[in-house]
Amino acid sequence: MQDIPDDVLVKASQGDFGAFEAVYKAASSFVYNVAFRVVGNREDAEEVTQEVFLTVHHKLKDFRFQSAFKTWVYRVTVNSAINYAKKASKDRNRTVEYDESRTAVATPEVVREELDRGAQQKTIDTLLGKLNPEHRACIVLRTIQGLSYQEMAEALGININTVRSRLKRAREALMGLSKEVAGYEL
Amino acid sequence: MNCERIQELILTDYLDDQLNPDQKNHIDQHLAQCPVCLDFTAAARKTVVEPFLHSKELEPSSSVWSGIKESILAQEERTNVFVSWWKKNQSLALPRPAMAFAGALVFVFLVGGLNHFKHSAQKATNNEYWESLAETPMALSFNDGDGFETTVEQYFL
Image (cartoon, rainbow over all chains, first blue to last red; front, side, top):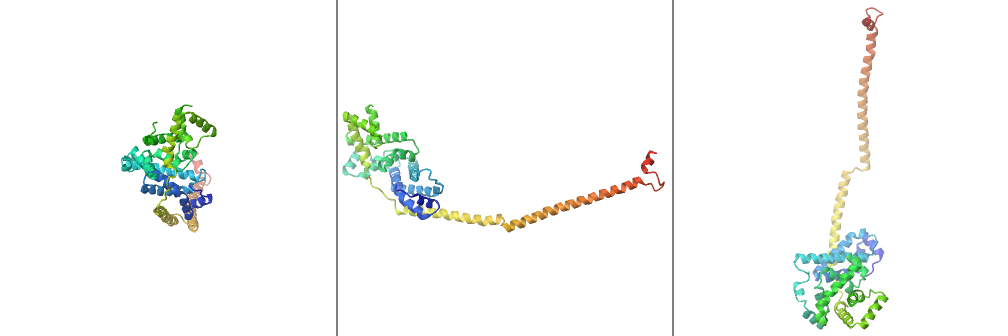
């Protein structure tokens, strides 16, 4: 996420709509990408993005700069995306919110084929589709967005060792899917 | 450190460059001697790191900002309607300074008038009482018939 100067945040918190638009421009890409990777499709990701910025706008006047704005946005985004994914999963009576067709084809053969074709985006979707929303959020924050373990702990509201433990389990699951592709036995 | 613990660290801190130099050096020394853990590291890197590197950055469509803007403006509109309604009704419910002063004045006069009326009534009652008392000794003190004895004396005599 791009850095946002404090004076822009102060103006936005005082109701300056132009300043709020600047906040949106600086943070929307991060919010949308995290949401997209966690919920699995553009339409839902846009809904989560909208929800995140309405929350930010509503609560910005109470933001006291006691924590970094970035950390706060990370947290709002991850919580919204995970909650949305869980709710969607429940509503649709599915184990994951990704399209059934997508999860159904997440076999080692498909992963191998995608890797061979160099279809990176498809591979990412396929791999993430095998994880639960919490594990997916961990992979996205660390491997795609490059957050440190400390930033992840703050964003997810968990301690740093739980971050390690979730990352380990998520990566073990990914390796489990890909071990035949890589020809590696755990 | 055994291979299991080494592989746990490889899956987390090692791949993510979160180890301090001493810890990293320790794992590198182990990998130099252990082909199993070395293979594990290569497989992990290929499976859980590389597919996500250089992933395409997506941008939300312009309709997202439009939707946010519309929602905020609609919310502000609702708030403004409420605020103006509140101000309008507040001016009716709560008196302005002049109205408040006039109201207080009327209140003082009413209370004062009531007190005055109560005092006057009390005073009238008192006057009647004293007047009746003033008449009573006369009745007790003088006997028009005999000239000297009072009715009291007459009673005891």
